[in-house]
Amino acid sequence: MMFFQILLEVIWILAVFGGQHWTYEGPHGQHHWSASYPECGSNAQSPINIQTDSVIFDPELPPLQPHGYEQPGTKPLELHNNGHTVQLSLPPTMYLEGLPQKYVAAQLHLHWGQKRSPRGSEHQINSQATAAELHIVHYDSDSYNSLSEAAQRPQGLAVLSILIEVGETKNPAYEHILSHLHEIRYKDQYTSVPPFNVRELLPPVLAHYFRYNGSLTTPPCYQSVLWTVFSRRAQISMDQLEKLQETLFSTEKEPSTLLVQNYRAPQPLNQRMVFASFIQAESLYTTGEMLSLGVGILAGCLCLLLAAYFIARKIRKKMSGNRKSVVFTSAQVTEA
Ligand SMILES: *[C@@H]1O[C@H](CO)[C@@H](O)[C@H](O)[C@H]1NC(C)=O
Image (tube, rainbow, N blue to C red; front, side, top):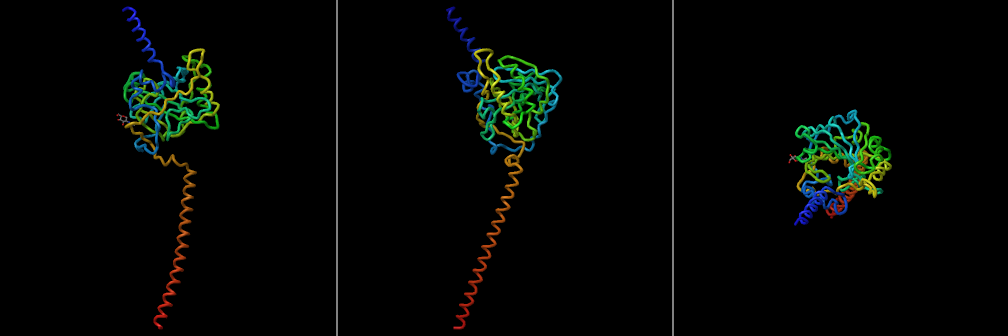
C-alpha cells in the first residue's frame, strides 16, 4: 500500500515536471504541446499564415506609435538564454500607442531556423516564411498588475512581429543583441546589454501592418495576444543570421544541443479575421513595377488603336470598291 502511494507520488511529480518540459521537435514537440497545455489545442492560436487576398482593409487602423523606444532607460538591459530563445528585458518606459489600450513593453525575443535553411519565422505571408522573426511583447498595464496576469486575459498582451530577412549589409541595431550571444551560450545564462535604440530593430515604415487576435506561440499558448505583424521586413546580414543559428545551446551544459528551429508551424485561422491597415495594391506593386505596368498598358492601347485604324481603313476601301461595282451594275441595268 505504502509502495503504491510512493509510486503514485513519483508519477505525479513526473507528470508535473514532464508538463513543464517542452521542445519544438520530438516526444515533447509542438504536436504534443496540447497534452500538457490544453490551450495549445484551442481554436485561435498563433502564428498564422496571412493570406493577403483574404485580409480585410480597415481604414480605422492608425499607424502604430512606439514611445521611449529610442532610449530605453539608462540601466543595462538583461539578456537571457532561457533554453527556448534569447530574450531581452525591456523597461515599462517603453510603450505603444495606436492600440485600443496603452501597452507597456516587457521583453523581446527571436525565432529562427537552422543553418542553410531559408525558413525560421513563425508568421508567414502568402505561405512565405522569412529567415527569422522578432517579437516585442507588451501588456495592458492599465488593466493588469503584471505581465503574467495580463498573459491569461483576452487582449492582455500586444505583440509586435517583425519578419527578418537576409540583406546585403550588417544591421547595427541587431548587433546590440547578437554581439552578446557568446556570453550566454548555455541555458539559464544571463548577461547585461547597454541600452540601445530599439526603434531601429523595426522596419522604417510602421503604418502598414496586419492585425488579428491570437495566442502566445509557446506553451502555455494563452489566447491573450493582439498581434501586429508588420508588412515591411527588417534585414540582417548572412553573418548575423548565422551567428544567431550557431551560438546558443538549449541545454545547461555538455552534452550540448544547438538552440535552432525554435519556430511554431502556422495554426488554423478558423473563424478569425485578419485586418490590414493598408490597401494591398500599394504593397503588391513597387513604383517601378507600376510604371512599367502603365507603360505596358499605354503601348497596348496604342497598338489596338493602330490596328483598329488600319482595319477601319481597309473596310472603308473595300466598301467604296463595292459601292463602285454596285453603281456600275445598276448603271448597266438602267442602260439595259
Ligand atoms: C479581437 O477580439 C475582441 C473580442 O472578441 C474583438 O472585440 C476585437 O474586435 C477582435 N480584434 C480583431 C483584430 O480581430
